[in-house]
Amino acid sequence: MKLPVIRHLQKNNEKKQLLHTAEVLESLCEHRSVKDQELDMIGELLTNIYGAVEVHDMMENEGMTQIEAANAFAQKVMGSIDR
Image (cartoon, rainbow, N blue to C red; front, side):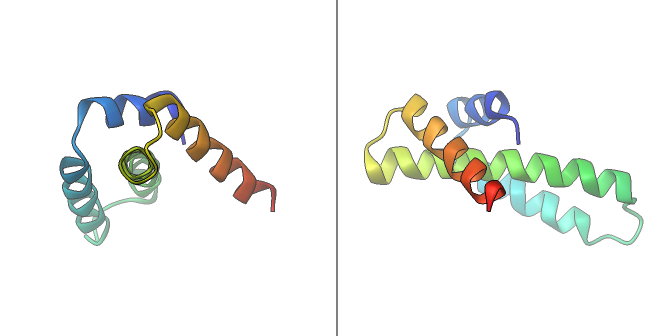
């Protein structure tokens, strides 16, 4: 997870675009010729994409600013890692 990447994705893409991209990447993972290293890279991309979707949701549903939502998401992730 890279917060600057998540912020960039959130600022420059609509939620619908991000979800569509995630679907395509998830489909690609299912192909038998995709190697472990490629799966790791796709996993990192998916993490950042879904992070951007989460930031969009916080802004829409909770009325947070972009910075507040990004920071809240980062805290949420860090809190789950500490467990």
